[in-house]
Amino acid sequence: MPELPEVEVVRHGLEPAVTGARVLSVDVLDPRALKRHGGDADNFERWLTGRTLSSAVRRGKFLWFPLAAGAVTERDDAGGPAPEPQALVAHLGMSGQMLLREPGMVDRLTRIAVLLDSPGHGEVQLNFVDQRLFGSLARDVLLPTGDGAPGGWAGRRREDAAVIPSQVAHIARDALDPALDMPALVATIGRKASAIKRVLLDQTVVSGIGNIYADEALWAARIHGETPASRLDPATVEGLLEAVRSVLRRALAEGGTSFDAQYVNVNGASGYFAHSLNAYGQAGRPCPRCGEPIVRESFMNRGSHFCPRCQRA
Image (cartoon, rainbow, N blue to C red; front, side, top):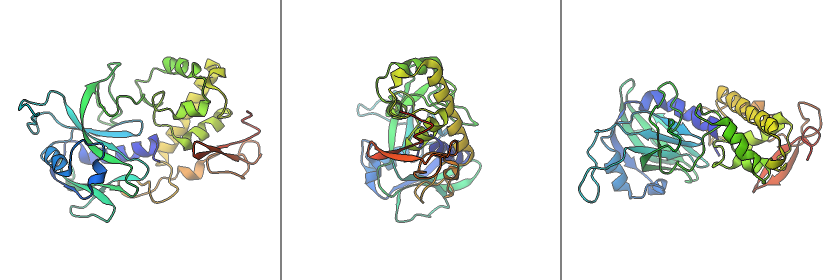
């Protein structure tokens, strides 16, 4: 499943093309990609056509594209204007891709095609491609953030609006978010009785960390994933979170982690961080730090990878 670095690579690639772009047409080729939309294909097409996308924003593994105010007059069932600002929300699920293509280019896995008139790129088509159909596009309203800080990361065009889609409001800030309250996060983790790896994967505690980067950060911090979070002192938790940040930054620099053709950036290229992994997927290979073979154990229908010498239970 794409994690924070993979989704940020996609957001970064989309940003120049979608910022200020007007939606010329929408073609829903598979309505199953609208499972979180709350309406049918015709409703989605009518709602999005003619809108202008103001930016590309991310929190954790969620992407959204705020709609410029006044692009289209949207009315509710009572005939009055819609009260809240709106956004197109994207979740990549396990195999979702957002690809920039020439107008008219689709393949058998393209679920939704959105033709854009981009200020800097002319007509370009944004294809939502999803093999397993766990991802989706959806209409959503933007709500005020609980802490009054910007809702997510918008890269070069920093999104200053303190709003967030309702579907994303339950997701915590991620480890690279400038608005993250680090002391509060350390305190929250210290109160958890669950295993520290489960806490890292809990998107309501800190978002964007999945199985790959949890294993890598725990290896870097020399912590066994089954250690109860409450048994870690604040300094150790801070060190672990710094390891999380370091791993995420390195993965971003290398374009994310690709093990197959399902994760690619907006141009269809794979990331290279898989070549830099120290623990995840390295079962049986020597630990880069001490030489002990890396162990893989079953964990939540997946696997945990760790060094039994460096990361003692």
